[in-house]
Each structure stands twice: as C-alpha cells, then as structure tokens.
Amino acid sequence: MEQYTAVICEAWRRSAITNRQVADATGRGDSIISKVKNGRYPMCADLRQRLIDLFEMDRVRLFLAIEIAGKGELYFDPPFKSVCHASVCFVQELLTLMHEDTSPEHRALFAAFSDHTIGLVAGRAGTGVTGRISTIIPMITSLIESTDQPHPVVPSNSAAA
Image 1 (cartoon, rainbow, N blue to C red):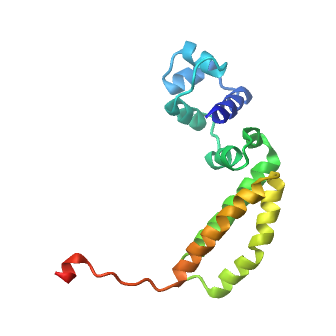
Image 2 (tube, rainbow, N blue to C red):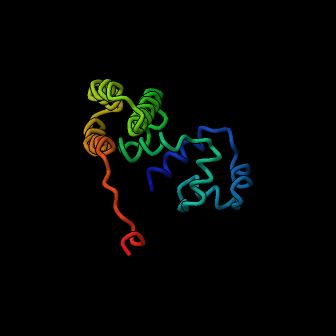
C-alpha cells in the first residue's frame, strides 16, 4: 500500500488541486488532508479510492506499475503508458479469442504473434516484467483451449430424481 500512497501523493503534487479542494472533494478535514499529503497520516482505502478518482488516475496503469512492474514511479513514465495501453489491447484480444465464434485462423494468427508481442511490450517496461507476463500465458492458453473442447452435460439433481 505504501507504493500506492506514494504514487497518489505524487499525482497530487503534480495536480493544480489545493489541499482545501481535496478536503472538500473527499469530505475530510484540512488538517487530515495536509497530514496525508505529507506522509504523517495513513491513507485509508476509501480515501485512496476517492483520490484516484479525483486526480483521474488510470487504475489499470497504476496496478501494472505497482503490482506487475514493481515500480510505482513508472506510472508517470510516458513510454510505460504506451506499454500499458498495448498490454490492455493484448489482453482484450485474448478475451475475444475465448468466444466460440472466433475462427481457428484468427486464433492461429494471434498465437503466432503472441511471443513476439509479449517480448516487445514487456521488454519496453523493463527487466522482470517479461517473466511475470510469461508466467500467466500458459494459464490463458489452457483457458482458450478449454473453450475449444466440448463440455460434458452434467445432469441436474431434479432430473436424476
């Protein structure tokens, strides 16, 4: 949570929003808001969410910077923003592959470019990110493959009675 607080406070510093405006928008007192901004008072989950909304922060990019890359300061890095956008597009494409009406040719084409795409996207984000993204690919692949298999029909209890 410390990284989230640090990134939110940095966004706060970069914004033109005064402590008084933050206090009004969050329903907190001026004193508490000042202490939170200066790191002398812990930021609760509710306040954290309100500040993310107030500063119009991108939740996906914030999550990827902290939880995937492990470097909250990347949130403000323009190339990282591009990497996040590409990653979200990549995941959206993966999710479309799970629909039954997706052609095998489309799946094969996507699979052919997956390793290369992951390498480019994750490589721009920094070392260690490629490994983290690569660890989830087998899980996603098996999920996609399971949609290709016919699912057995399990009789309900009322039918068996």
